Every structure is written in C-alpha cells, then in structure tokens.
Image 1: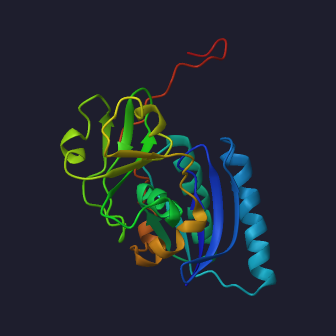
Image 2: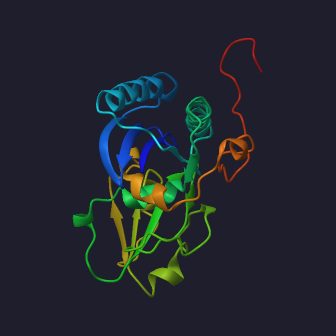
Length: 230
C-alpha cells in the first residue's frame, strides 16, 4: 500500500508518503506549532513528488490522538478533505503507538522492558499507556494520568520501563526508581506510521462522516487575551 501519513498531535508537524511500511518521502517541522500553515504546504509538496514518481495513493493515515485539541482538528480536517476528494479510505492510528515506533532501535536494549509514551496534558497530567517493546501492542488502557511520587511504583518494582514523549520530561524528577529510564527528544513522526497504518482498520468515505479524533478529555478553552473578548 502507498499511504499519505499525517501527524499533528503535538507542537511537531509532519507528513510522509509510505509504501509497504517504509517512508518514500517526508516533510516535518519539530520546532513549533504552525500546523494550519505548514501542513498544507507539506502535503502539496508530497503530492507533487508522488505525481512525479507515479505513486498512486491507496489511503490516508492520520494520527488520531490523544494530543493537542487544535492540532488533531487540523490534521483531521485536512485528512478528511483529501480522502473525500480522492475517494480513498482514512486510517486512524494511535498516537502513543506512533510515538513508540519513533524511538530509534539502538536506544532500547534487547532485555525485557516496557514502553511508556507520555504526551503532555498540562500541569502534572499526561496521556499515557503501556506498550510491548517488540510488537508495540497496547497492554494497558490509554488514560489521562496525574503524576506523583507513587505513579508506576508497582510496575517499576517488577520491570524496567522506558518513558519518553513531550510529557515525560516533567516527570523525570518525580519518578525516581532505578528501573525508570527516560529517553529525550522523541516525537511522534509521520515517517514511522506506515507499518502501523497497514495493520490498522480503515474507514471508508461513509464512515469518515462520523469520525472524530480521540481527544480523551473534553476541550476546555482558555480565557481570551484579546481586549474586549471574554
């Protein structure tokens, strides 16, 4: 399958074209949240490259969340538009699983361990779950978890856990078990979505009408800082 992959769940924005699980071309900005202006440009460049190389898209894969409300909405809107326009299916992919797939293999030992991706959910809360290190299959429910000194204490008494993602950094000073290892600078990236997308369930055009990102929590708007607006 040749799949256009879109990832907008954090401040990082990326898109890629993957075939048989491997990235043929990718575009990304890992340094700031400008998804509304950047993502259309990335996709236009990738579709131009696809046309030049006679790559015919079979589907669009979308990072489904949890993550940034605004980022997920932008990614979903653009992905749906492409799918409707090209009459191809949409494939939602678990964002935390994408985060696991984005870890370079040399950063993980071959011994038994567990992967615990964390996405920032403000204050001391993170979106997280546990994943098998080899299959990347989810082994616990995805939750919005408030981190304190007792977080993961039972799990860490039994095994090594690797924490990573933009929510993990703020937890490093609190989760101090010797079995807790933190990997810095890991972001969910579209170029690593191909293999996951091929194993996920696709939505046809009719099903897409009812698709919503996986927000996990209800959106709570912050007070406006614009004078005259409340």
